[in-house]
Length: 393
Image 1 (cartoon, rainbow, N blue to C red):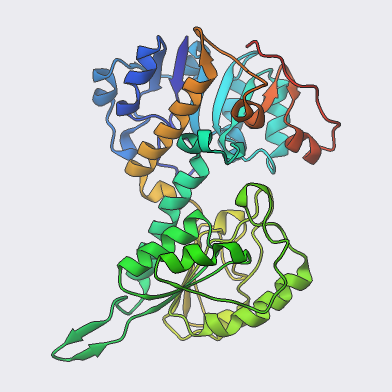
Image 2: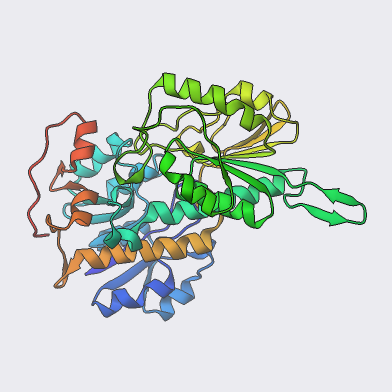
């Protein structure tokens, strides 16, 4: 069976789905691995390293897709809305595609992949269970995004983050507020703490208070009703507009006192909630920095411009839409572990098997046999529930 790793074509994407060190376990299982020439170059993995691990280079993308039984990508067509259309046209009946696919919002791409007869697995849909931890791309990439957000803020802020006692006087530490205490938020808190800032964390889920405080930060508590703020799997639940209005009102004072605000709040399959208003930005001191980790979903700040860095009211707002791609070496290393672990879970007895009894496979399967089969995606498409797929490939 041939497994192909394609060069990423989304603008600004520098990661690669599989690194050379992740290849030997695949070959050991009898898989033949192909890679498009140059696919790992921007992440720091030259073609020669892949060849030393037994990977066969393919120069032409059309030829790569034509040979492959399964294609591994960081961003499949749904998560690559502009350049990804060309890859949809390359798919064929029964071919397997594994990667991030943005399946709950990129519905047109999902329909098109299904129409080609390909089998699509979206790694964003992995259930948060113990057995899936080594495959959890969202957590892996969120860790990197939280780290990089603070590094960008430190580089942009016209102050130093730590307190310093010098002959020229004492330098007071910068104040950092992290909004959203999921994986990205907790990593941002930990990174800001390591750099010496005074850190506060806020989340609508009271249950994360202990995690925030365990990292040495202060948990910001607002007088809000948050009992229904957590959805299945530990994700934040979308709240009504009245809740967000009250939250913005109470959060404004904390934002105004902060030198750096890192926003990471996201709801799966929905636009990012607007938590930082233009008025709140105006209340911040000139030179302050906002890093909006949720920029790709529209941003948590009203003034965020996805993919751009702008200045408003003297405040720099960084809307980088793909922070993990800014750390491509280690992001690729982590992603490769995730996707190859997923692939080997799927590969049984010399073929890829869709086992409906395996929760990991069942939850991530989006398209198969010319149809959209994932219940969550079908609900978005306003289709009735699909029958459970059988276990043969």
